[in-house]
Length: 248
Image (cartoon, one colour):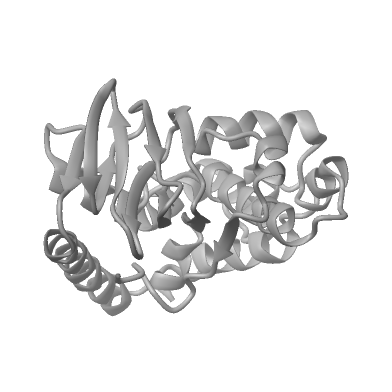
């Protein structure tokens, strides 16, 4: 149960031989190659011939990877997984992996820590009202009128009480969880439904309009819906329902 909730706070993509322009965003990011090494630039410093990297939010970066297939994991900073990665990075904003072995060591360590925390959470149990809130979001996020206050009414708690309970057990706020759910669905549609318009996708995902979707998508992931649509033949949405990380 807990792992499924956390995977809603991860956006996983595969980019096939497509350079990434310089940008920054509010999510943690883990990037690694499935085949050939690539070059990245982090805060104006070039790192050639690497296997992968991890960056904190708001780190400017780009990738020269026209000969590589990359896995890109975007992670909510205030989620349990995000906090584990933050603790692993410490005072560093970036971590470079020069080989597959060093990345696997990092990945295994994070996954073991996550599994330990996950088992503890499962032992003590997720509050049923938090579970009900998440189930309600998953069923109703497409409706634009869904809000923290509205969800609180559904589970018979005050907004402040549910907000504190939700953040304590999930890590992020209800509104942030709702935003991630909408953005993940919008990105899935952009990458899998080429004939659908961005306006239609925005409305179907629960946003008021395409401008609101563009604002949040660029803020969270550093790419606009229109640019993502242009590159849709080179980018694949990955489902992580049964995995925390994809191991190379």
